[in-house]
Image 1: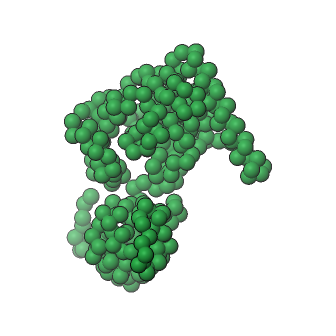
Image 2: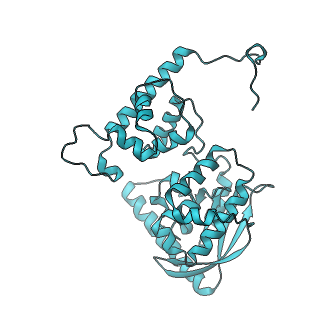
Image 3: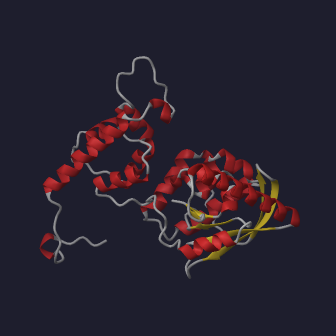
Length: 316
């Protein structure tokens, strides 16, 4: 990015007004303070203790859970003029258990662009969702090159875990394969799958080294998984290829499938991931898995009242 000197600024350029910046800082401080005071320690895995006088979380607890300094976080709640990185905002959003609307509000108050907004990817069109549904009972999903799950059909949603119970910001195959017990236990050859995914992620990241979303994902994986750190430090790189996989599904048992990536653009990026049964037993078990998913959907609709026709789920 090119920085212009003040006497050569582009037409229409205007520096942010100090008053606006100050208002934003105070709104951000109040928002953080309000959210902190309305989260019980038990919600983030902390003991309440007998001498707790502060409603919700203490400042030092938020700082520790977000991996930032206590003094720095205190300044943030005091509306001091300090710079806040998108990585810190992401960490605070996770610590304070912000929903998608609250997360968007946090980034807006900080005048920052959310690198991982919790909104449907604009590349996921209604036609693509229809294709996902028509592929059932074959499991299929849409992924980007960071392994974010953008949308999936019913069978995929129950293949490795109950994906609808996973928060949208955690629907990433790399994150799940290193941190989600249900997902990990469903992959028969877990160590090999983890190694290949990390190697493909490294190859894809070479074209996105300066992008915050990629850096934040890498930082999260290195922070949350020692296994990932060991694999990542091998510096292996591989390209995508068709591969046979085996999953141990909790509902129907062992399933063998052939994995194929269908690229949605000329360049490596969004792709449709499909799993075609490798044998007749796997085909029958996938059909049963779809029936389970449909039964769940029918019961959920019955409890909620009349709704429109179902559509494949969307991710972050």
